[in-house]
Image 1 (cartoon, helix red, strand yellow):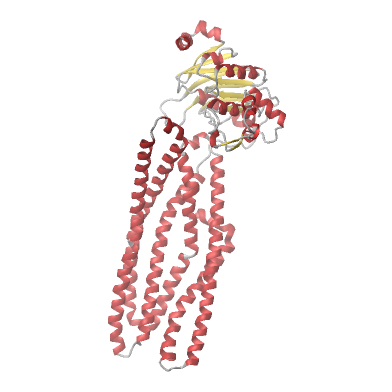
Image 2: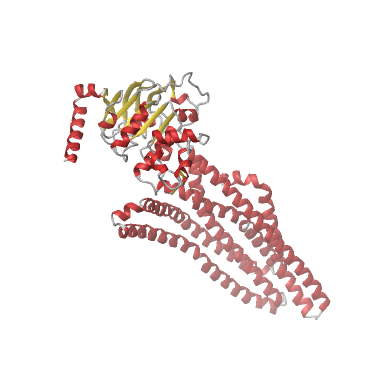
Length: 576
């Protein structure tokens, strides 16, 4: 709950005013039964209409105070909980934006979505409940007990028995409810994951006619979530029948023993009515406490999931003292670099990687799938950090760079093309919002995107859907390349970024890249894509198996020759 205190502290005035308002409402509810007893006993019995009018007037005034207090509590509790919830959501989103790839790999995207939406909603409910029901219920309970005892102390034992019975029920329900609600949030993560995958891959589902399969898969996780939720809420629902049974048993006891006290002239009939009213208020308040504690139990699960993100240690941060290079040439040097995703891994993904890329050179990277090509280049902009060794750019260790400076210096076109909802212009200028029209068009031309963009009805102002759903795979890749080229980086990385582009367009992109002065790293599946690179790096099981020009590798590397010949044979077969 320390997290709630931290965020509610900003809105302390509202947090104070809400309980004050609730105190006024509770005072109203406690006083009315007592005043009603006076009306019946002194006013109605004696037919004293003046006295009745006076007491009714006081009752209306107290009602007005209670109404005003209730509205005040509702308004300020709502403002405080919603404002604090918005602050938590802001900080949670901000923290996720700072995550390194290592941090991101620990969680599923669906889990982030659930925590940013449903979990924060649960926490807002906890804040609202804490400022309203957890103030109202104890005050109403204590006040009603005091008023009931003041009417007839001899019946207090019944109240004690009722309170103890209710406490036993509440304890049992909470102990069963807390783990159940933890399971509910986990099942919701699964539902969001399946739903997200299905919606993102809707075209694939259609293409493979797997609608029935996906529907059954979603129905299965949805049913699992429903059953888990029903089990959890079933525990909460059981509270009310138990409370009603306890109340009715207590009322029977009050009527039984109260009747004997009336016969003994120790209690008035109208006081029995007031006593029963107070009993109902006690039970209602205890029920509110029970329901509040169940909601808090669920909120505590959500709060723990939110705290898990906020307290996550970000392993890649700016150094305390940043260094800035004297040159902007794009010289890259790896010195005995090792990398593993987790410390407990049996074997590193990259092993003893050492090489140097001189300014302006083009380095092609080739390997079998899973040999660590993408990981190798992601160490340059510190998307991951090396486990051992050092990476230098323009003579400075990347760990000594300001992250913003480094990632503007090293631009990467990722293997997975991601575009955002908006216009093509907004997507190309996404990383360079202050770029001029001429610079944007030049980048699009270099990426071979200008021609197809101008063929669209609205040109650069064409609106594309989420992730560019109304563009082809090759068009999306070219827009993504243009977005990166516009950064004008010192080091440019292509992570298999032309896989969806035809050979002719790919050669045009390569020709445009040659004219750029930056150092280029090109990961490719086809040797033809990197054949004319200044150096070609062949990775095998995380190590550099060969490094040199195409001609040198053809002469000195049997593995490279085998890859080249196999690809040549496939091309010949495809031409046939």
